[in-house]
Amino acid sequence: MSDPFAVAGRVRLQPGRERSLVRRHPWLYRGALAGELPAGEGPVEVCDSRGVPQGIALVGGSGGSLALRMLTFGDARWDEAALRARLEGALALRRRLGIDSDAWRLVHAEGDELPGLVIDRYGAVAVVEPFEPAWDPYLGLIAGFLTAEAGIDTVLQRAGSARRTPVQAIVGAVPGSPVVIREGRARFPVDLQAGQKTGFFLDQRDNRRRLGELAGERTVLNLFSYSGAFAVAALVAGARRGVNVDESAPALALAREAYGLNGLTVSDEDFLPADAFDATRRMIAAGGRFDVVVVDPPAFAKRRAELPAGLRGYRDINLQALRLVAPGGVLLSCSCSALVDESSFLGALHGAALDARRRVRVLERRGAAPDHPLSLFCLESRHLQAWLCAVE
Ligand code: SAH
Image 1 (spheres, protein in one colour):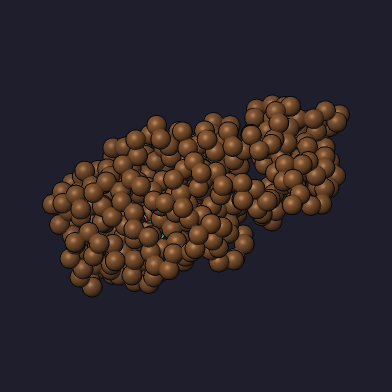
Image 2 (cartoon, protein in one colour):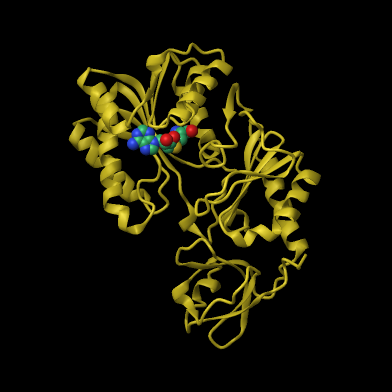
């Protein structure tokens, strides 16, 4: 096998385009390059316009305009020891966090200086999701690290969003049924074969716990519920009722399974396979009210061109949600669109509050749990914002 660390070629930047490297930003777009990328998968040496080496980068193959992701800066080496040191650093950080769960994100891409690489663990199963095919030659080494150092016995590979291949086993076998994880006092089934993301929305862990603290004796509407995790967290913490809305039938089947695992009563009317925009309108027409409403949709703006429509979507769904919050209730409104910044999202919430004629106050501005660290050198990779609001 060829050495995955061997530099496959050199690429020069256009004059002035090394500026982002001085700021330690890990991304370089096609437009920053003078000439073509070398063919082949291996890492490349990045030079400034005068030919002075600036670091080593992974070649982007995911089809977008992102051409290179920096692995090292200056003359730092990119070798097995460097990869290992980053994996060890990622693991050590998680062990310091005191996460009350056996499922957590072990590697958060740019946030762990492993750009474009995500590794989530569900108990003894790790799911590796490389967003760049250029990570593929390293997966054997990574799996070796996980089994030797991280208490993992099964390593699965999930292809990044650009590649549509099924989940494969690198070590062990793909589990035939959902794996059960624990988070606080709740248990969740995680479908590692066909679930969304790597199987579960680990980034919402602390927001689920917070919701549980507020949900005692309350009714909860969980819009875009996926496997019902927010409702389950609330019910386990003493909520009176949790209603889940998702357009995906398999997601709601998992949600039912989650209720069962936690000894909660499963009633058909608490699992609505429906478009959330339609379902909320029907509930409003029927005079529905909930003490707590969670809005956690998929990213409405994945590309810059989708921003205006995405913001209209956030405004509309939050308007419907606000109409369903009982006076004195709570709205937890989330966005996982990296392109939507906080002030734009708050603008959408403000418009929704005006249209709903409700007084809305932000109690907490929340985000992803700390096993999803955000690199100060790559703020664009911030994705999740979650606004906990009081609604009068
Ligand atoms: N809140 C979930 C994660 C939500 S992910 C959790 O904490 O686990 C977004 C979910 O929205 C997906 O499950 C997807 O199936 C669902 N979805 C996407 N568009 C939808 C729509 N228009 N109406 C209802 N559900 C939708």
